[in-house]
Amino acid sequence: MSMEFLAEVNGQIFEISELVKSVSYSDKLNDGCSKLEFSYIDDDLRIQNGSVVRFKYNGANIFYGYVFKHGQNKQKEITVTAYDQLRYCKAKDTIVVKNDTIDSLVRKMRNYFGLKAGTLTSTGYKLPVSVQDDKTWLDIIYNAISDTLMNTGKWYCLRDEFGSIAVRDLQDLQLDLVLGDESFAYDYEYEKSIDDNFYNQIKIVSDNETTGKRDVYITKDSGSIAKYGLLQYFEVLDKNYNPAQAKAKADALLKLYNREVETLELNCLGDTRVRAGNSFFGQIEDIQLNRRLIVRSVTHKFIPVHTMSLEVML
Image (cartoon, rainbow, N blue to C red; front, side):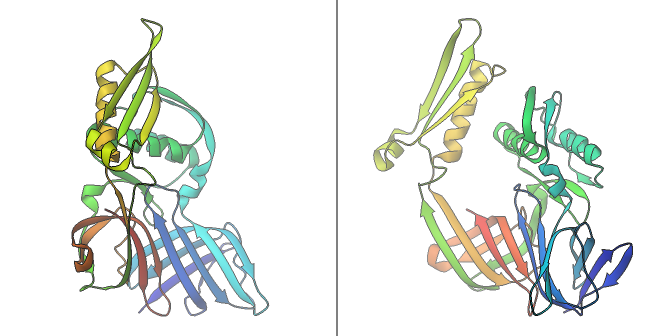
């Protein structure tokens, strides 16, 4: 095991890997910034809010970000929480979306906050014209990712890659990695649910400016309703949708939500390549699992040995 742990305090850079007692790195798929939490013991060095920290493990780039919290206890152990650049994008604003794609919105966000550029995959899909008022930049981009997925079937993620803002196609984040009961995983928890994000009837309404009435679009799965009961999704569309688009959206939502939600958490030996949005091949005999899985969230712990806890999408 080799760690490189740099902290910049008041313009000076300190290598603190020998002082660090615990390190945890967490990352979620399209759900805010990644986070590094660590603790160290030192009488003289006081890491401050705004300090830059950089962490590498066995030569792999893990985290580059900024300190937002620090504290200490009676034993003089100092605890620190740092976030990547996306933390700054939680700011609310009013943004006009016009002739924009995911990547063009990310460029605007990056320019506004003065963030460092990374790989921006060209997504191609032009988003509906809208005025996004009193929303965070992150929420606006996550909505754009969701719209693009619904309309093209292609899934992207926004993330900070060691100090550079990137948009990635999840297809490009597939790892040559097998995790399961015969490979690196030492525990798992599995659940099936219809409690959240399960719908077998979709009801969509949109204002018809010609007739002055509301058009209603309903699509449903009668077999699923007979089995589970009626669970309805409802949405009011803006005026930019025509009838064909509204019906297509209803059909797409039924396809997306009309299935039991499965959750799986894995505890494994660590692999520095694994981040939210990456995928690997999962194999667990007891639940007949044998397919590629996308990482929804991951927490890596590096001391005393490197382990990771994953929540995956099934």
